[in-house]
Length: 100
Image 1 (cartoon, one colour):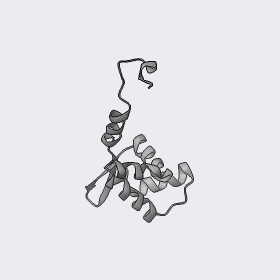
Image 2 (cartoon, helix red, strand yellow):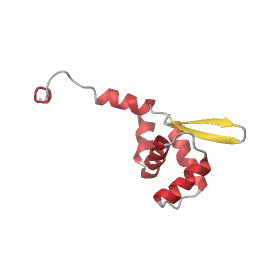
Image 3 (cartoon, one colour):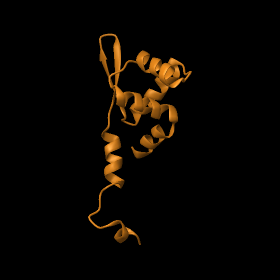
């Protein structure tokens, strides 16, 4: 799972999509495309955004839900928390004691 997560985070467009969903979760594909175009000046097709969302979903960073004919995309922060818990755990010892 970590490989998929890092692969998803490696692309700057996907990080921008994550930023947008962090700011406002529950967006449709149309809303995401509009915000990428208007706010970030990205000239990217709906198909390309959809493919980026599929990679983010495979990594567990985005969850989708259907309501009627609309599909909403929500940010799932759990995989990011797992990464920070894995490597950014606070040690009781001071930083000078942690160096070999």
